[in-house]
View 1 (cartoon, helix red, strand yellow):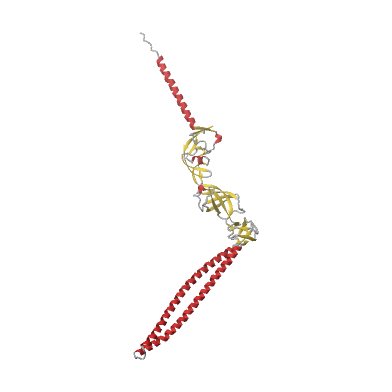
View 2 (view 1 turned 180 degrees about the horizontal axis):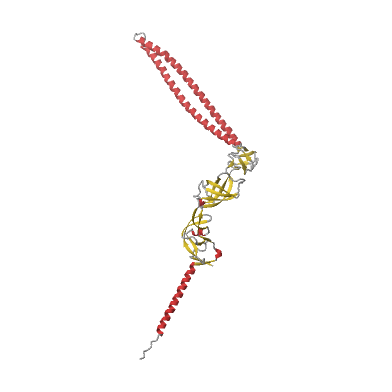
Length: 417
């Protein structure tokens, strides 16, 4: 018996519609996915980038320097007082010894000031001598008066005793006794008044004497100061060395405090350098420095750190350990290295521009086929002029981009062309 055959046209139509819908969906997904990937991928030329392998190496914490040779000791010549140059005894570049006369100035106002102060001191000394004379005269006057009063009292007291004894025998009158007692009391009062006057005069004149002596001391001190200023018109070398930057002519007028030259120690030198202010809290006296001079390495130590920062830099002085190199000249410059700590093993990569632009928080890491580089968060540690320490986020053998990231900040991948 024959069965009717059902048509498959409707079923095939459903399958075809499903396939078309799936293809459309796939096209849309590919379109939008590719558009999103293109927005996070940047194609760069291999010739435009620099790379470095992550490797285990010795990390040395140091900074490179460019140090200049300067004299170990340098003294500036400044005029203490201004004046006219009368004589010049040495020439620029000459060797001088300590206390050697270099030039002589003249200054009439200073000379008049010294003469005036000498007159003041002389006047006060004369006043002091006059006061001492008065004090001695008063002392002698009071002494003579006391002698006279004591003589009077010495004569009256025995007489008073004799008369008082005769009173009971009625040989003298009451009036005579009263007269002698009054006279005796008078001279006793005179004696007390004389002693009081003597003490008062001595006290007053001693106070005046102390004031005059103090005034004389101050005047003599001012006179010494004025004489020292007058003596400073003779400019002398404070140390032995070579006189430089000295261009002074006879007849020239120099101002007070004007710098006229400097004296450099002839055979002793140190190195000085400018360092970025970023390191100012890490530089300390006693830190070691290595300098390449005349094809040899010399050891130095930081001897002085100047705290003043100018144009983003501060100055550091370094002294040689042991004897300095021979034939050094002021102004020569050499490469040096200031060590913060001894070296230690660590994962490192080469130093590059990327460090400043990412702050050491992320890098681009190459895939194994080097066809592209992927952005990855990392943690980098200390850096020196050569390498950067890797703390976490990278493995030994991986390779990263170390050239500038200036145009890469908005991308997640780099496609290497």
